Image (cartoon, rainbow, N blue to C red; front, side, top):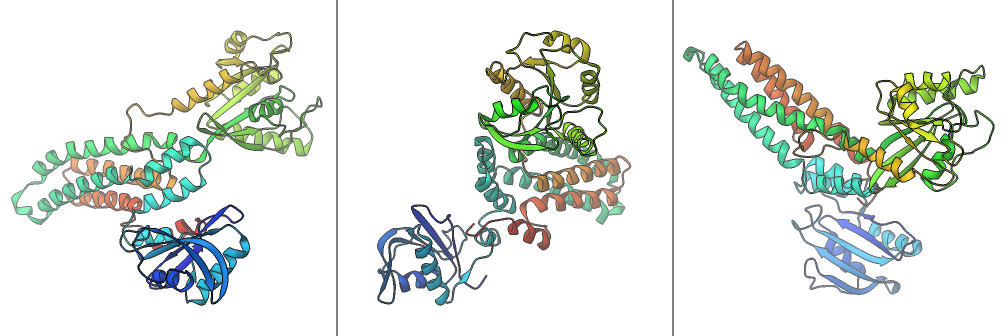
Length: 449
């Protein structure tokens, strides 16, 4: 981290482009190419000209941010230039000539992490925030960036540190015969830690949906209106719709934002008995999508009686999070939502993709399923990252093992389990994380972040 780095922090082709610089040569670099040569106040934006010798490059703005009050914790700077690719290329060419190095993906945020400006969970939230497409995604990422997970994890680690110290006291002084006393003292404290960890795990499903989007699979036999409904929910003709059964042969996935909730709508092949090899593969993928979805919408043609094929598909959805949709409400109805419930056990809503009737009610029903993933008690923080959830699950397992060991008055095994739990939680903050994992995390970042 001794060298000074630079990169574009914004896409080219917009009105303004921002070039970020971080490292000990930041201020000298700005002074070399900017018309203002001295007297910079930290965090104050200056207007001037960028020149390459006598050659005028751009009319721009510059700001110096001196350590430690910068994003990376180092001396830093920004050049706010016009968004022309030609201007940006020339500015970066000049910076390279001054001995600066083009930053690697995520290197600014990595320096912030390594300089103690943020914990690893907050650094990961930066990328989540940048890539968010729905309001709820952005809100969850921003909360994590502001440290929503930092405090609960630190508190849990502090509690585990106290427990480890108490258990080790019994190990260090075996002649005092404190095993029973220490075990009786620690078990209630560890039960409390276990409850708090479980609470974070319980909120992990909802958190994962907010980060990755709620997978909603449209399933049913051919020609029940899956692709038509997909197009209506998207507001565009994304899927091919014909009167020929079996038009959809593969999975079609589209993302959409419903009142701030990210949804991944998945159109699937019609499920039926078929000798066509390609269609068979599509049907297998449809069944797989149904089982992996956060919610399967099982479609039934409201203009036709319920068939044995319909009931077979409903049976496949048994035990899964599923909702029935009675389609083609613009046509004379033969099938009611009451009959669907009686014969399949699935709650049902009517919907017409043709005249849009029932679509808002369907969206409301989908949102209700999302809310059903909420834990009974509001968690200390919403865990949106799979890596964090895995670490918490690991810590939870270790704490449970420690409690079991204390029940047997085995302080040695309990201490090993407690240290394992502490180590697992340290992977979230970055205290105990492997360098290879850190490398993998920051390689997912884009340049300039």
